Image (tube, rainbow, N blue to C red; front, side):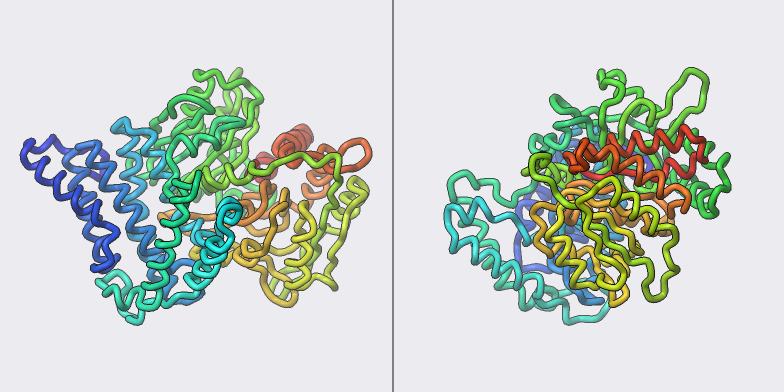
Length: 562
């Protein structure tokens, strides 16, 4: 019964051997261009089900990695195209296979192939998130050796983003011929792969654009453990990735998909009205500790993780909508997670690794803080009490540049963030949970979407704070990925972001801003290393707690990134 993660007894050795041979031939030939990618994806789905039932770990890993590769092949061509039909195909494929892949990843971990499970987890989460920048890769190393080859990669990559989409407008999950699926990008794709092959023959670039192995992913835990969280029908599974050594699985048998969805529903209802439902929030946090976070905290302590250390959460699906950092047993002489560790979040392991690259403190070269003010936008309620927050920021950070309501347009917004590594956003944000990278900031002359920011050259984008943005809202029973706007901003550009899980109470903004920014400057008002943001937020939230604000209000603030 694969739904219960209880594989059937091993089939006879001869049958397993025949199936394994067939699966090897299939996965080895998965790059063949003579059959439809969607056909091969659906065939691989059948193989994955059988591999699961046969309970042969190595075969299981091979087939599920093949399924991921094929899903990537289909989605990579379509998900970054601004075409409704292309998006519908990509969305349908991701939706169709998302749960099966998560289930397969958990089974891989339970089979003892924990490192392979980490690689599958990262690949799966990156399939959607990395489409925006898949062909917008760093070519500095290539350009240093072969500038012309680097330029060719840029040109073909740009053409691929505008390549043709399927000509058929039938059900996107039925068989579609390769000619219809990618007629005009066939030659571009071949040219791209030929260029990549040439790059891999250059000195030191043999692994250019290949799947990331565990040894490389483990760099995400360089400054503290990273906790992956996966949820499926019958249980949840976390993996603690340490700085060195093997990853450690934590099975959470009571954290079923139904149980986690129920917690999300209860939390959503309790936080819908300001200053209400506080007792219900406490009960949610208590239950979250019991079924998931408590066992993880216990394992961290067994591993010798010092109290007060930084840890990073990398949750998926429904777990992304829960305040894992604030889970608490609420028992005498027992501490909650926020009293044990300083939490940050990251959308992927790769995003955290990238956030630390070229990460040099800039105290000796003060950076100005850009404040973007857009209190009114078409179809949006006016944001209250921001004026006092901006005045407090200007008092604490003398080098503040204000882009105000009158002068903030889509053009000036994008131009200003290229010039300022530090940004405070006081404007409406909107989550598009069905198409995460359609999420945007609302201005009076239009929207600035996350792809607009990602496609803007921001090599020194260090930190952003967005407190006035709307929280992600989606059906808790969907298996889709509810990407938080702050997570999307960190993934797209900034090394660190502070945001909120749901709409902030008006009373908290001024105090939070004051307590946070005064910890982010030196004695002369110069901005410090942005990697201090998590500790500064933790301390600022501590002030809110000391003032006994309702728990639903202080658990709202979160940090993403380095």
